[in-house]
Image (cartoon, rainbow, N blue to C red):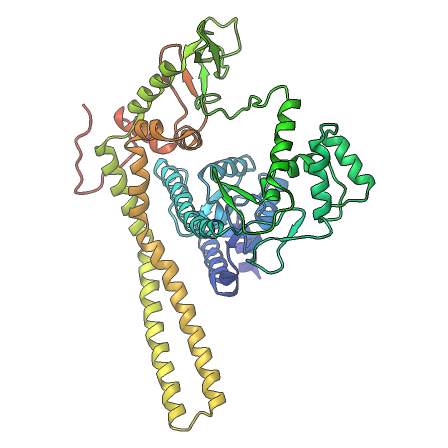
Length: 513
């Protein structure tokens, strides 16, 4: 009894476990079980008391609607400063998007909770932070590759005229994977919405009221709202046109309305609108808007266009605090050129890349020595099971096993072999992907300015978030003093001869004088 009390007193750290798989096949296999087991083993080794375990079955990390994940975050929030660790099997179980990873990580930090990966060497040291950032980038890359494969398959079906997403109101899908079919109960209402709006006498709100009076309901048996009316009227699917990823495809399903009626409604909308292109926070002409901050007044730069005497448009960056002595209008070309020059200053060189890679790979190999031993044991287990399977066949041929016994024993052995192979496949990926991850990440890092310059607007914004943890300051002439992400921050320390990178034996880089 005394020993038990002593052990309880020694456990000062607490944590929760979060496990996730993204497919039904993984749920039915052993992925969840092995994740949870390894997380619990890690907690025992690190003397962490597990307060709660959250299991996510069949939901992708891409979606923000992960039920158990949200419960885990809320649990940490309610128990602020009482949960020391948020334990996951791998970082890609936590998030598949580097930006989301950083946001949730900050939230956990506010709650006094630290993220821990069972299979990856992350911690609060400079190398550990940089490692975590790069692993989260690689997780996003892996997800993008999977998405690309999925998108290619979807695109082939779209080219065949098949709508691959959820059926809109007025259509239904009789079987999974089939094309759209007209809902004979809802479709007449959809057609009437277009016909009435084309008359030019109804607004979205008045149309919603009209159809609510007629008893028209959504597929979830709810009332019609003006936003739904607008969504219906803007959807070309109803006239048989599929607009996907910037292109149009002709559907092979039956349209509810004629194309002429659809385009009449779009023209009618334009006539009623004072401004067909409202200003939005996301403007592809000003990728640095919101990121750059004036070092004098702390106001973020915005962007706008002015019209010259001959009608030509000119783009400028500026900020709104006019009393600031640095509140000037700077041509976008000059402003972005200064930003590119700053990116060149913070970009790591080949010497830094070599040292960083060697250190991370050394840590990686050290931490996965045990993994190699486990893989060797798993291969031996597979070999033994293969022999057991052969023995089952021999006993059946010799008449010891009946046909029923033979099938039963064969199924058990095959299941055990499949389980071992799944474990081996998962661990084999973990063994060999680190060097690829480092190479992939440094492919962006070593050409930072060139990558940023060549990216389209959405990629520019995402890339900026990977470089800077917050804003970057502009003093009226040049950029500087941005809160850099760990990989760039450590490079600045290295260049300043204050690096916390420890050179490995056999590696003697020539440090700057």
